[in-house]
Length: 414
Picture 1: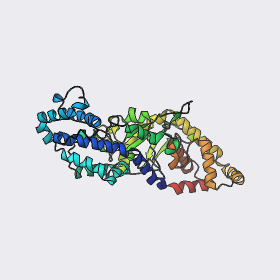
Picture 2 (picture 1 turned 30 degrees about the vertical axis):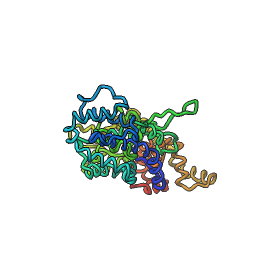
Picture 3 (picture 1 turned 135 degrees about the vertical axis):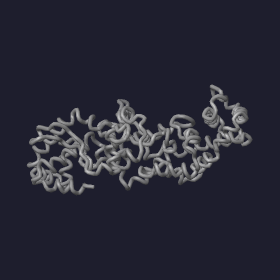
Picture 4 (picture 1 turned 45 degrees about the vertical axis):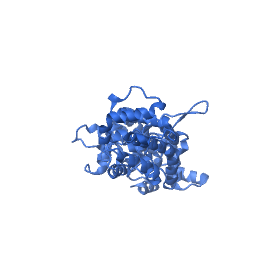
């Protein structure tokens, strides 16, 4: 479980790029649904001369099926019959339509369309604020979660009406690798999610976009940039599936990761080469929010649905090869540790690099993973391997002559 890092200097431009990519298509959907609702409330507002009736007819048909499936035809009416069908449906279902208080939904849709900052905030609010902003919109516009959310979904639907916004969003994340700083899934740090190149120069997208807060319960967040977590198919479709994530018991990788307060740790007696298992240790109280988000709460029902490490079955997915991998990495560090001062001096003479850069070069080549937390997403097992590395200098060789390694570690402590 690693954090998705976007450099602070790039964040404003990334947000604006994402917003500009999809905002026009979303506005079209907002308007089509708003007009459909207005026409259903008062069919005399229908203006067949100026409205894009094809799209509005498609939305209206879905809307009618939501309100009263029994009085809605099994097939969508022709666009030419839109006005007649709307008036007929209204005459049969006036009481139901009035009871829905659709003016509240109309006000929300209208303001998201015409108040530019409102839609921008909804689409680019950062991870620690998206749930709060969603709840504020629901409250400010008196949205009833039972009566109104399924209607709102018609404007925030991935595949239907006008344009496939989902493909635009996937294109933003995966049209080129330099758009993202994560090649491997942030939930597990095991499975590649960056595109694979085809012989003809094209790309195969192998990653998925997980909605941290699910689309059914939080339709307004369906396209929110920081509600979309680039992830692997096993994490998204095999482990998480339909589990409803919350701020209380799950951690959004856009916000934080496991960091140094939760680490993979080898268990052994005497010599690390006699290692028995790999566990996960934590260094914060089990009453803290951080603990709950990563580890859940065993006292509650369905504990395996709570805490990211439980949901994604992290320890079991690492453990088949974790002991051998840990022994291998620790052996490499141990074998090289006493020679690092000489290697360092040799590399400095050749390349003129300062100590930390020389060490990072050695680490990347020998540990086959990224040294810094901000780069963990670029290589598989980066969090695991860094934890083994730190364990060596913290526990196995406490008298190491390589004090500059400790200085790098200390500098990066949270």
